[in-house]
Image 1 (cartoon, helix red, strand yellow):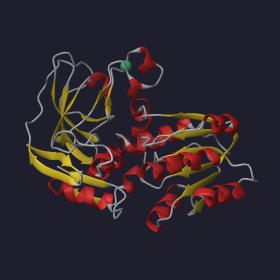
Image 2: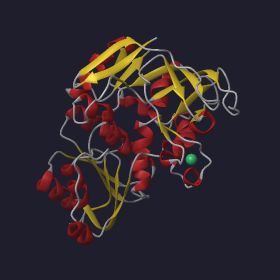
Image 3: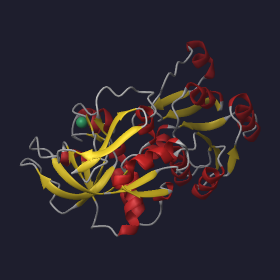
Length: 338
Ligand SMILES: [Zn+2]
């Protein structure tokens, strides 16, 4: 089979790789209906994270079960499934506490930008849908694998409740879906921070009530102006830079909640500033598995349409263009069809 392999900065190749096989009895092999490029794939693509050796790319997936190991019980051949970017047993104490992405047996999924994918711990990782979905539902179901699950975690970790004022830092696909999640959780005022017109439009469609284009001190001032001078009850940080993290902390009211779901790159927090900011901080790799059953129902019931973040669809063999379009911010998120 052919799949995407990253060789170094801005060097993604679509090339021949060994098709995955069952390695452990708890594995499954999935034939992917769709996959995509993640904002976090751009860190190694841009060379911010070095690529030591050619690396198969991709960790977002949904599709049909093609093979299962001898110990797999719950997942059946021919079933349509979605899983998280971390495989998890879903039985250990950390999984039971709802943090499957930190499972004691967690394994990072890789190589999903390909026609076939090996998923470890299939029974714990994969969630089946009620039937094989129509084409129309595929983008939204694919989004649950990471980007929607992460947006939902952003709102969950920031304890968004009905009536709250919330702000979202970051207008990438995760930030936009954090807006959608906050809306579903009943936030009254949802301030999206964005400078890009097409993203502002989608943010509004997903439920943003206000847009703030300013950043830094001006951005903080704008949010305070909108929240009686005290800052937002909850702020979701969906970028992972020093600037975005400080923006989030300074925009939150004393005693409020901040979630951070962008992988931090060079973020350093000052103890004294943290102490006097009086905020709650909670983040990390989203435990998407916890949310999958509920989110699948919401997609099937047409209550959410997170697939709207895919504004570019390409055949898988054009994966390099998919990366370029996101790197240059011509696309919010690229869906790839194997
Ligand atoms: Zn576990």
